[in-house]
Image (cartoon, rainbow, N blue to C red; front, top):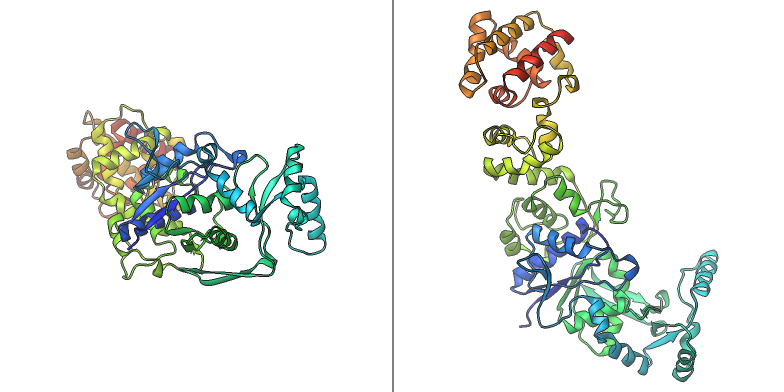
Length: 493
């Protein structure tokens, strides 16, 4: 039985998109499920869109996600870009330099399956505009198809610029079987004679991808369904070379909440943004696996190993999948709650520092207490900023809910605040022992109890009448902060 060989083949044109990460994930899960290999190839032949540093970012993002590359481009132990495997080079521009595509394009030209095209950009632009004006689908009109090879070579010898186009057969049905979508057919009358080699000598995606997948022994092509309309050209190229075509698997589109494509071009859904907001790799990967695929159970929480064990393209949806941030937060929150308090404390610290809550020298015991206090409430690390701001901000920046203001303005509130301030003035600093006993002392002194006691204190300090352990808030805020806040509230309300 042939070993499964799948590949993820992105272009280094910016940060990795969430749709790209899901494609990489589905490739990886299928490779692991079948005991096969996952390859990473870099398709950088479009030099106009190349972004410096994008390759390194891509590799770091994949490594962060837990997707392991078996062959191709990787980061070594020192974080340097390297290549592993026998089918390289795995970067297309290096394959161009090695002349890998030359023999294959020459074969197609010699056999009359491709031809030189000398049409200028101006002519092609005018042609497209005329076709659009006539209500036609813009495509090449085949002007250079009839040139003989000798005529074409004479033009080249005279220094004329050219591309190389695929010579599709006229009015012919090309069909292929897609693992998810079923049988798909296109007629060549509705297709274009695709450019295979650009004017700069670089192969287009449509040519390079066929040669590379063949040479690298790819058995399954797993990619987004935006490539379906291009697949007949790829199928024809396989036939033209006499090669066996891989199995095609086109994944449903990732949609935004408006049911439109979650588009990289619009800046939506860059993986880097999710990392910066403090999502865990386990949470994001777990969610992405369920975005268009469903397990054979009601479970929704999976490790990478469990996903690989269950994964099958038979359970991938045919239609687009809506990216639901609330569902992502729920899944990620599960992993946040599984963290140790110490690890969570380290994870939230940079967000607190960036928000100006405290500096690098903030005491570990307070940081751990902060993490323990909010672990059950935050779904991603950046949530700590909105949840815990009241411990640290100036009193003038505080916000109080209407319910909190109502609790602060009770007749008993000022008596409670004065009692609390007196108790604080009796100690050097607030420790947990004081925090656990102070409210009972105030109750004894004032005779006020229940929510009439607790609501005014919580409301004044936190801006809300509901929240986590109030004793923890006393310790985190400390003596002087609490006194200042209570005095501010007394003066304002």
